[in-house]
Length: 63
Ligand SMILES: [Zn+2]
Image 1 (cartoon, rainbow, N blue to C red):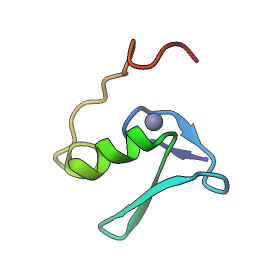
Image 2 (image 1 turned 180 degrees about the horizontal axis):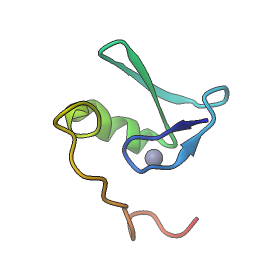
Image 3 (image 1 turned 90 degrees about the horizontal axis):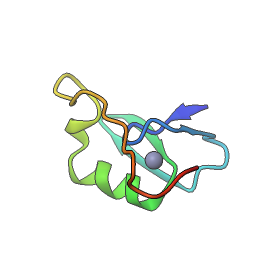
């Protein structure tokens, strides 16, 4: 399993529909919104300048 770097959800890389490459690494996302957010500012989510992880509560309802 991979971790969606935007929301922290586990994503199965075999079935993931949303992924991005950044600096030679492949990242997987649970939803198009997470990929879009990552693509806009990938340095916020990976690498030395990433922001502290903040759970996105109240963003899209409960799981
Ligand atoms: Zn996500």
